[in-house]
Image 1 (tube, one colour):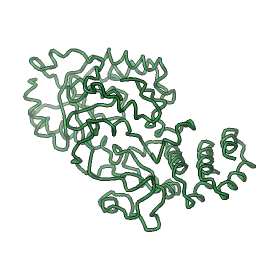
Image 2 (cartoon, rainbow, N blue to C red):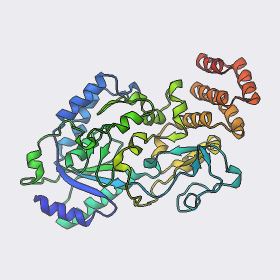
Image 3 (tube, one colour):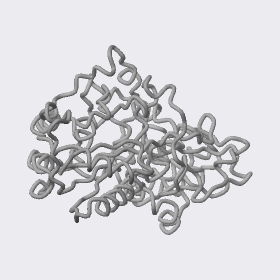
Image 4 (cartoon, rainbow, N blue to C red):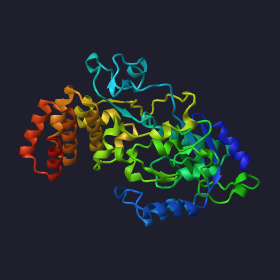
Amino acid sequence: MDYERVYSALTKYAAGIDAYHLIPIPDLTGPLEHTIGALGEGLIPAQYRWTEEKTKKAYSYKGNREWARSIIVAAKYYYTDEEYPDEGGYIRSTPTAAHLSGHGAPRELSMKAMGRPYGRIARFTWRNNYRYITGRLREMIAGLEREIDIPIRARPLSNYTSIPEKVFFAYSGLAAFGKNCVLINREMGSYFVIGEMLTDLRIDFTGTDFEKRGSPVSPDFSLCENCSLCIDACPTNAILEQGRLDVNRCYQYLSENLVPIPHAYRPNWGNRLYGCSTCIDVCPYNDKLKPSAEKHTVGYVGPGDDLIDLLSYSREQWEERFRDNQLIIRDRLAIIQNALLCLGNYPCEEALPSLRTSLAHTSPIIRSFAAWALGRMDTGASRRALERRLREEGDASVQDEIGRVL
């Protein structure tokens, strides 16, 4: 099938997608070797239960190679003019209008909540852009079917796949890898998410750039030139060198999983309720972007939450709050752990009842982080709560944490 004809047809159905391309199925031998190397170095957490066998399967398209013949790659820009409502970890005295209104917006902040500690959600998670982009890709392929009058077998993917989608996007020429292993596009910086549609369309790529491009190769980071801002800014030194990321240290990974977080990493955690974008935020390509992204409502949860309220959510309230957002698939206890970390960095007497409750949680990890937060509060009431808990605590790790404080 003619490349120009298909690409032209796609253009008619690209509403809501900020960048897209049509590419052949690339050979992933090079990227496979890179990932297996990272696995062998221990840069991929054991928590992922990732193996060389799983890696080879993923980079062989997980069985989709039997039918897939081409890929539509797409991007959704997410940088809007919305702002975080907190200053220095606490909610502003006057909430912004954007935070208090709009379909799907967080519940209205009461005057009682002013000055309470606030947990930030990384900007790329304010909305479910992954669900949004897969929905748009489905609409695009449906329009293409009507346009060319041929049934198309297709599979949309975005983020939650082990198939190396960032390689596809870099191979398309729409972006290049930065030294932080994040994609950079000259118009969107790194403030975009990607998705792709595997299709059975047999496209003739003769005469296109892909005919000469060959297989994906290791990134040269030429886009970054001599810049090392992302490497220097990483709060845990997770970016070992250009293109080498120790995921075990990365705040993004740590915020997604219920895992022990070293004491040395905790003060710099700040008020991250979920995610980390430090290496993105300091990138010069993101410095002068226009905050013009669509404010769609798919899975909108906003920029964060009142931490005291969040710790009081019932399971039903939790599901109502996050049900359409990607946060709902994360371990609830991991997010609670993050909230306790935030409260340790931004102490508040009003949080004392919530911390006492967390100190009696069934999870020893949660009890440990509650103890750490109470220790950072450092008041007579917080010390008494820890002393009472120590007398009845049976878990050695929690006992050690309380002992550190007392």
